[in-house]
Image (cartoon, rainbow, N blue to C red; front, side, top):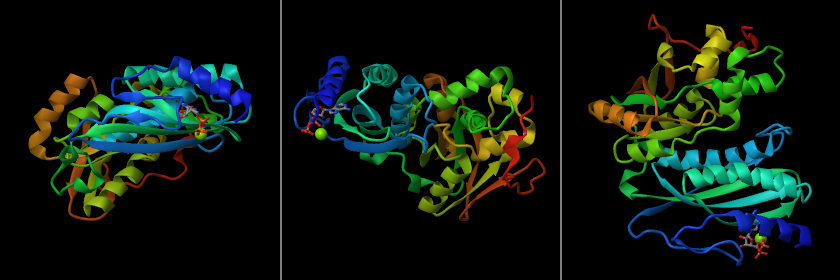
Length: 322
Ligand code: ADP
Ligand code: MG
């Protein structure tokens, strides 16, 4: 390992906060961690590659935040409590300023959720960030994709399509998103992993998934894993004021149904859990919307206000309002 890489690792080590269950963190050949007795260890990993998962001009602080956020979102979708993470950095050069700025975003989110960075790897190569998160859940309470049942309600947290709109703009659509643009960009660059909601839903909801590839695509995974169909009410899909102001109805609905990178939780729950779930929405400060029903079947269908099946148009989103 080159001296420069050692310097970077030392800078990381100097800034991380510990936890009691980290017996040995950064600095040895591996970390020593003490999981709580009786709970399952939940592990997730996600990689962000430059030019594929984020544009080259992404601010390092946002990239640090997002690299951890997308992983915490996976734990939230399992109903797990986050505890530890590891970080593999591939960097074109040993840029100390870049690293310090990246860490600022990464560690800000880690601090919010008391996640300890316990190890990683630092190499030279094209810009790429790979994070692994570890958390805990009671095995019987985990929110799995295969647990939806016909008759369940389908819910989603927050709003849909904001990140997709910001991304469409970045990818060269020449429109503007209007006064709501900063809010939409914030959703793309700094997603909020729904950790508290996931914990509140563990043992209460049935199936859950985080919306990373688009609502319809992600719910299709639940349909396949659970052997069910899902029927959504198009006009129930939640939209932020910023998105409503930025886009006409058709491109907006398309982004809500198919835009990625929202990192909201979509989940199913028995109808007799409605009040309990609404109470958890209050307790965790997370807006929740009931958007459909689990049915006998095998795919996701979306119905418009007249009860007709609606298909999202493929190319709708270039029609920005302003
Ligand atoms: P080894 O050669 O044994 O893999 P490394 O030099 O790769 O050791 O890493 C030294 C220590 O620094 C290890 O504890 C490792 O987990 C930690 N580390 C390396 N890179 C990172 C990183 N990007 N983030 C956090 N810890 C890191
Ligand atoms: Mg190593």
